[in-house]
Length: 67
Image (tube, rainbow, N blue to C red):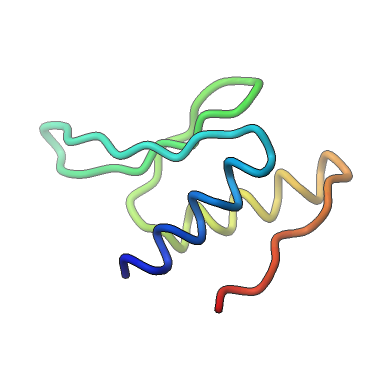
């Protein structure tokens, strides 16, 4: 889990985005901050899929493979 979190965070940073964690009344959420705002997710898998979609939509280099 920790390794995957570091990898997703690194991939986000390499594109100028930030991956944050927030604890809210509904529980812990991951927050992906990008140039157009923020997106909230419950799992890292959801974050990764959203990042892949953002890369595709914006013509950015695709995410690498998780080691």
